[in-house]
Image (cartoon, rainbow, N blue to C red; front, side, top):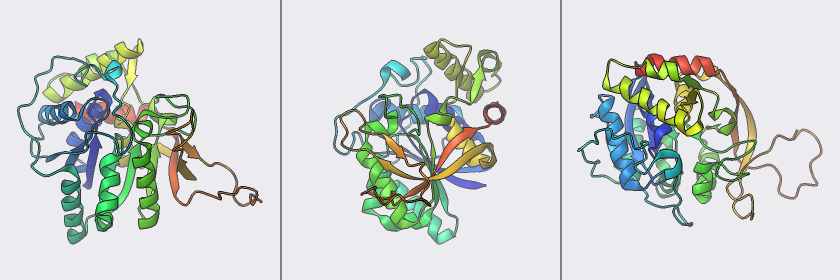
Length: 316
C-alpha cells in the first residue's frame, strides 16, 4: 500500500478524489487536511468528514488548517460547488469533529512518523497550497517524510479562474510559489496535474446513475450528476480525482519535466503557472532570469478512459 495524505478544500471534485483515496486498496490514507478555498473552511471540514463517513473511513484524522490565503483576500466558488460545497445535495452532514491538531501540526507529526518508519508519503494537494507552504517553511525537516508531491493546480495552457490562472493557484499564488521553491530546495519531486488534463477523465450520466449498492457509490453518482448539470453535459470529469488516479496508476499519465514559476505580480496574469517549454540546450543567455530553479513533471496527456474505469471500479 502506498501511504498518502490529501490536502483539500472539499467541493464536488475534491469529494470525488476523497472517495477514491479512501476506498482504493492500494492506498493507505494517513490523514486529510483542510483549507479554505472552494467554500469556507468550516464547510470544507464538514464536507470532508461527511465524505469520509460515506466511504466508511471514520478512522482517518481530519485537520482544520488555514482559513484564508497568505496575503490576498478570501476567494471562493459557490457558483461552481453550491453554497455548501457539495452541490447542495441535501446529503446528511457528518456530526463528527476534526482532529484537535491544526492541519500543519497534523502534517508534521504524520510525516515525521513516516521518517521513523522509513515509509515516505505522497502528498496530494487538491486545493490552494496555504497549509503546505506553512508546513515547509515552519517545519522543513518534515519534508524528509515526503516521497513526492502530486498537486492538482495550474495549467500550461489557459486558466479557468482567469484567462491565465487556474483556481487553486490563483487563490493563493504566494503559497504555490513557496511550495515550489521549498520543494526544489529540499529535493522533493513534484508533479503538476493541471487543467491540461483535468477535464479528460469523464464519467457518463448513465455510468453515474448506475452507481448504487453502498453509501460511497450513491454519493459518487450524485456528485457526477451535479457536475453534469453544472456543465450542461451528458457526464462530467472527476476533476481532482484524476490526481489521485495518477498516484495509483502513474503509467496512465504522460508528463514532461519543465522549469516552473508562479507569476505573482502581473495585472492580468497573477497566479499563472509559467511552464517553460523552451529548449535550454540552446543559447538562451538573453533571458535575464534564466531557467526556474524548480523543475516539475507537468502532465501533458492522460488516458481518460483508463482513469474513469479505475474510479468507477473503486467507488462501487
